[in-house]
Length: 328
Length: 263
Image (cartoon, rainbow over all chains, first blue to last red):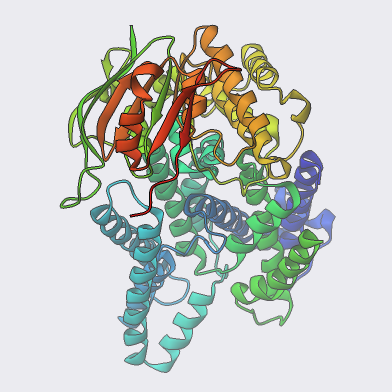
């Protein structure tokens, strides 16, 4: 597929997804009303709904979805493993561990500002552990060692979570399980600011590594003969992609499949050139998660479905469809 | 001026194992066509990788153009030596031009866009290796011979002073093997230094200015073909009797393995 055409389509989809996210909810607005509210005019109630609730939520979906898809594409390139996704190095385990700990201790409940902080701290602990273990085993950061360390650290955290849940009361368990499935419920401008502060600079750094990642895709040794400082690129890319993921998990919980499926879908459409793959994955992930969030709050309104359920229910058939097309 | 130089090189992959290289000293002069020969496991690829700074020596010194290898920056090194490694994954469906354009990374770095000088270098490299007509083909659709020429074109697009190649013609037929060695010979005549690891004794005898034979991590012989490719040296190193004759048609030395007498 033509790269610029797909880029244009994805930009249009992104704009449409933000508009849909702002329009639909318990009170549905027309496009005109929604735009007026965004621009600071229109009905006062509409303005409150749009500016306080829906716009931050839409922007959060865009940042988290884009960040996860971008991080997933980078992890797949670095680990040279199609099963790689943003959580593969134990970040989800660490984040969920932090979140469940404060929930079990009764320090936070769903929606309180301490929850994202605890999740972010947990994710950082997991990243730190994985990199320490992997560096101790192999100075040049062998991807196989990293992968094993990630899986093992993740498993350890999930064991801790199971222990905490086993000794918690039923409402806490319910809150924790729902958090682990991911949700953008209760998005605030503070959350948007936190996600943006990590996602936007990180995205710029990762996009700047695209050419080096292309060279590393044909082999680390060949890349080093072509002048790439492979170890340095790996360290920077892993660290930055992990930070993006940690920020996403902290504000929205563990949203699966976006980081796995979106980069594969884009790769099937336009190939593996990271200079194209990375920016388009960001756009596609952003639009996909914004639409998924609309579905999550509309499908069983006034209740909400965890957004991770939507990403899996919609993402998996879509992915299988693309996979079938790519093999023909 | 020397291009590659190793002094008393010892490389050990793991403690307790016999060293892959055990006290190797060698010099490749600028503008030479230099071949490294030896049986499987004699340390040929290890020597090449040590000369390129990918394998760190246990003891001994390695230098490039008189400067110790650890003082070279990765990109500066890549502007000086183009490498065609033995193995490379091609799972990634790039076009020929995209793969050759990767040879401009040492000049461009991660961010700068291709300029006129880069486009000229890429075009010249494609033409030199006779792959310009394949430029838009995905590399996954090339034959072994075509792919090898494209990889050499990528190394030439680096505009290096030297090329290092690890068995560039393994698994190629005689036409492709000859055309690659003729391309390398032409490049040497134009001033490039070439260091090639190969199993083909006859082709090394015919094209290389100097040869080095490795045997279990040590230098068994070094010099011009007449001094190195002797029945005595080759018989000992390969542990197989050979006959060495001057071949009429080309004037080169011809090594023929003999039938070993039954014990």
